[in-house]
Structures are given as C-alpha cells and as structure tokens.
Amino acid sequence: MSECKKCGQCCKFIVIKLPHLKKKLEHNNRLYLDHKKFYRLHNCELLWHVDEKYGRIPILKVFNKCIELNSENQCNIYEERPLGCKQFPGDKEFIHFIKECGLSDN
Image (cartoon, rainbow, N blue to C red; front, side, top):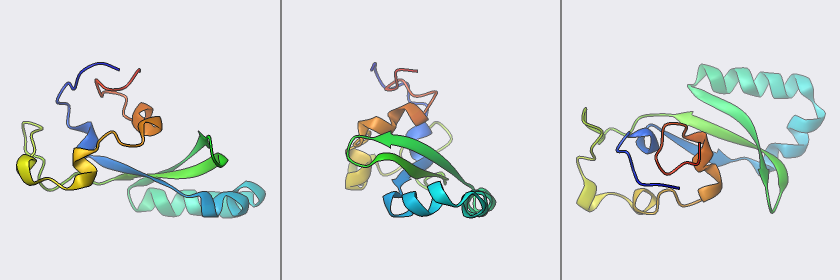
C-alpha cells in the first residue's frame, strides 16, 4: 500500500458483502444470472470474493458517487464526513476493487 493519490475512487462506489445469498447463487445459475442482470440495471456489479470467514461469497459493488465529492476529487464536508468515510479503507480486503487507488496494491 502507498499513499492516497486523491483519485476520488473511494467516493464513487461502495462494496457490500452478501453472504446470505451464497448458497442460492452458487446452486442456481439462472437465479445468479437474474441477480447479475438486476444489479447491472441498477448501476451495480455482482462479483465473487474469497472471505476468510465465509469462503467464496458474492459481493455487490454499488456505483454511486458521493454527492459531497467535488470536481477536484475533494470532499466538501471533509471535517464533518461520516465515520465510514473516516475509516476508509476499513475492510482492507476490498481495496483491490479500486484499481486506480494509491492505497491498492494494483
């Protein structure tokens, strides 16, 4: 990991674990494809991730730029930003989903 490049990628999407859908999606390809299409239509991406606790689990990458991210990739409310923003990258196992990020090993 290196330093922040101020690319703003951390403010353009979130990643959510979906362990409760694992069995359904692994054993029903039609359901998996339906979920994948549904999420894509809603500006999301359904991916698989290997988690230490759950093994292979589906995750949802939600593309939704923060309304407080300005054109210079700076936070308009940096001093008052939410805890989730302050703790970024928090769940470090997901940092590799941000390809341009200076905090990523990619």
